[in-house]
Length: 78
Image (tube, rainbow, N blue to C red; front, side):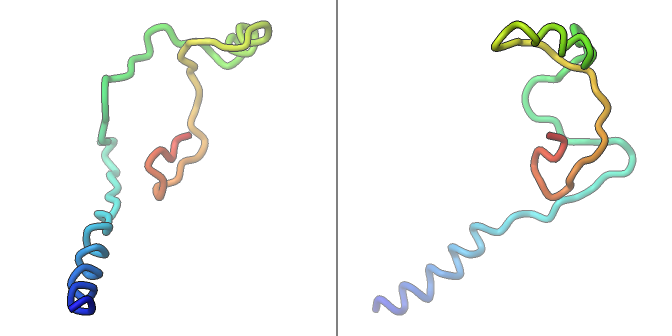
């Protein structure tokens, strides 16, 4: 009886853990989660370095160019 339960649960567990394949879009569309992020109040990296020089924490938005991303990671832009 234990073997039958095992044979039933293993395929179920494996199929439950399967992930949907990643899709890529070439027309600039993307999935957004949470609140929209705007460019309001952003600073450049030079300004960020100056502002962060004398503090241990800083709450701001930084404008920068994405040089590389990884499609396999959920947050590949990091």
